[in-house]
Length: 86
Image 1: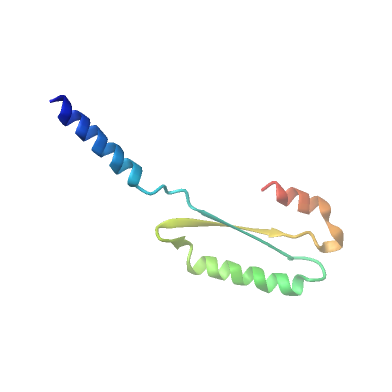
Image 2: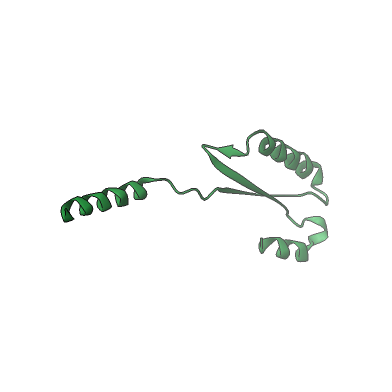
């Protein structure tokens, strides 16, 4: 009887170890939404948002997206430092 329980527990442990972990996928994008190069950054940000709206899940894993400002507006270092904490 004890051997059967040992085999059952070992089999359950192997089965649990082989199941994939579901942690999600985090994608971060840093682009210029303000300042002199926003003419590039704004359309880029819109494209990233459109792609995220089209497919926000890959292989059953949820995607989480963060779009941050790069702080290029007059060297806005305070905003850049605040975004680094995210």
